[in-house]
Length: 409
Image 1 (spheres, one colour):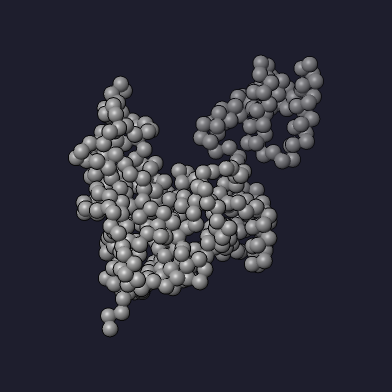
Image 2 (image 1 turned 90 degrees about the vertical axis):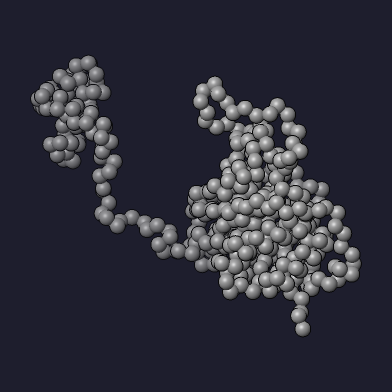
């Protein structure tokens, strides 16, 4: 057995010898000896003619290399600058164009930072090829993964009872409007209300670090207290600047509260970032306080347009698709993750938790408490609605419309 092993080692050395220098030969002999185990050093010494001292030194060198993690993985075979160039070097617009293809019909789980597309990589590669990008479907798949997309199988979701035949066309229309506004350097915002939160020492899902055996004590029931009640976080997301504003209301979630939140965003952030703006695009779902059929929403927007001089365009998402509004994925989901284990003991705590929400992509959120009273049940008569300077779009005017300031002449 030893004779056969020695012969095998000798033959390997003869084949590899032209590639070895003294250092590499010593390391190889040490590796062979360690693999053979007991009597390995003696066998390798006889087969190679190396001294036992040399092989022992090789074993020490191997141990040292493992400890410092500088094995020959870092040894460059190719010349510096060799190999295929990164795709961004010779096609710098590929990533942007891929995102533009995917984003208009993007769907997503609002509780996850991942986004997923219902278009196949083969279709996307073909569309990119038509735009002049030389890219295959495998590279498209790799780029989508780098951009934060995940291709998933079809799954039934609770989208409501409505499934409008023009749903996808409305998505495309909203994207076209947002792109046009951004090309003109006009602001585009996405708005929505986060679900109401109980204020007080109530249990929240999740866990956080506490001294062992000393969890934070909370109330045993979820009945809201008469003093603190609930909080209504209303969010405004600037799609171009990737920043957000959240008004934490202490009263009712009405259309006046929704527009007041937009007003506060504009006064504190919007007009500073867009000093030359003449227009504003608002994307919102079709229900609640900013619903497409809510009269008070349109009347309140008219007042805002008169105050600011902005020409306000509104695009509503089709029925059953509110979770696809960008604010749901870019702000609200991250707020939920940031405070999921924290009892919301006061409105001040809620404001601080929202304001401290950040993401790896650099999202920043400003938050402020709104203690104004917003009474419910305000009815807008036909005569008052007719005073709104509203123009409906040619495509689904009930979803897409513009409100201009009233003429002062």
